[in-house]
Image 1 (spheres, helix red, strand yellow):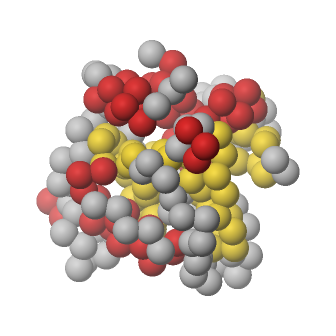
Image 2 (image 1 turned 120 degrees about the vertical axis):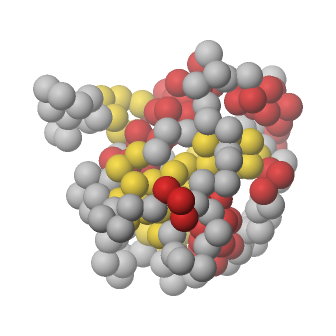
Length: 192
């Protein structure tokens, strides 16, 4: 059975996974928009699961899409990790501390809005069933890692000769774009 410790060891022993250094203002290019998210792995009923959100239909960017909690870097944030922690708390009410962040996946662009996303991995033993999302989040979604693995397919509609895209169709949700690429990176690490 995969446990919290197994995930921690798998991620820490992965050479391709970036250590979550305090990335921040020194990396800012004024021509780019930066964002960071938390890829929260938790263990309801001892089953490793990933926490995602369904974005509100009223949002300007990516309405109704499935995403990780997080958002845009702002000048008051000291680092991209601080952005992910702040935005996650604002969106779904979870407080994550830096000690829970055990790695950073490769930064990923959204192709439509051209935002560069830094995805940080955080581990939680258990998450409350009583989370209250803010107005940016329509719903909080928990998907078991094994179901995600089984639902991974190529996104032929968005793929081209230069880039192979992926999607997940699971429990009436379609996960595609940057979120699917981040999930695929995570699953690739867990396979190793």
